[in-house]
Image (cartoon, rainbow, N blue to C red; front, side):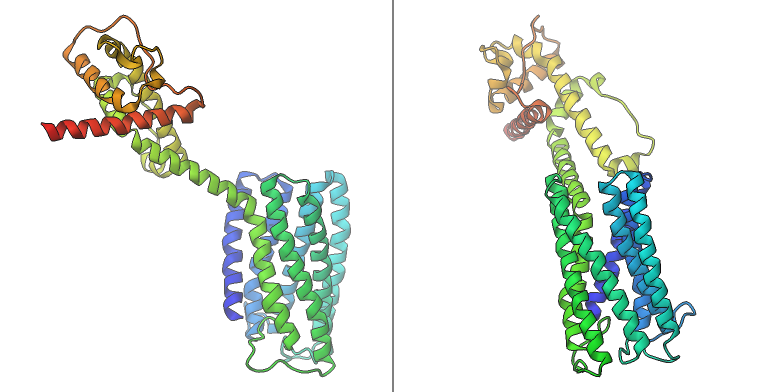
Amino acid sequence: MSLLLALYGAGSFLVLAWMARRLARAPRDVPLWAVTGLVACWAAAYPFGLAADREEVFLGLAPMTSRLVQHILVLAAVNCMVCFYLFSALEPARARGRAGWYALALMGTVAVLIAAVAAVPEGTRTRDHTVTGVAVFFVTADLYLAAGFALGWMWSRRYARVAEPRLARGLRITSLGMAAIVVADALFVPAVLMRWAGGDRAPASLDTAGAAETTLGWVGAVFFLLPGTVLVLAGVTYPAAVMRLTALRVWWRHLRAYRGLEPLWTALHRRFPENALHRVPARPWRDALSPRGVHRRYYRRAVECRDGLVRISPYLAALGDGGDSGDGDGGAVPPERLAPRLREALRAHAEGRPASTRAVPVAVPAEGGLDADVERLLALSRALREVERGGRGTG
């Protein structure tokens, strides 16, 4: 279970860094503040819980005090989760009123935890559930957590029915994690009471760090609590992660298209350098690596290719059937037939031959907008590359 705890801690801090970045872009988003607070409390609780499990002094705090800080942060995380749902579903005034009542419940629970820790004899292990103060501490915390996550589960399921698909999937994943945490807390309470009453202790072969020292507590921690926490973190980040993945796919498609247009763009740019849309970025290296830089270069190259084809189209028309093959529809000409004519038209322009007085459409898609246009340009660019390779081979 130590490996699972380590993964939980690392995952919490990674998600926190991501949430903090999102929060910096939307500092007035109250629900986002609540989610960030939830993840921050979970992440901050990790080192205190680890020190308490190892019975070590951490930041000058005794192990039992570290255990108290850990649980205060975990309970505060649950309160942040409640605030997220309140401020997402209710008017701000109503949400603040309801959040105030839940804050009072939190303060009452924390007061019980502080009193329980004060009653624990010095030197007691932080998970010695045979001591009444320790048992009261854990039972109180587990009951609060079970109630908080039960409310979160109910709200997640309710809002998933009316949310848009991406958010609904994230809420369903979150609800599964919350249900698992509720089951874990429901197992922890009897496990603590069993141990306090002198019940069976977990075998030494089980790693019970982070769980009540009974087999029941170990089952709750390994099979419900830690997986549930991972699912909650996954559900919270799912909508934004899917959006980022979609953006990454668009970025990759634009990067490939930008590179694929290079043969066509090079041939046209050599003849018509004045068509270049000159714009020097303030930070060239940052622009080269940023997603926006890729999109900008993609659009510029597509526009410059289209401008070049418009400029060369009179020379295509002067070749006879030209770009439209006599049928008036340049989009109907296969790229394999159009590419050698384009090469000849570029040669005619370089040699100063007379051009036609009319322009013809070249590689124009029937419909589909910019993406369809770029697909036609890419097909022509690939065909032009093959023609140039064949020409070099013949030469």
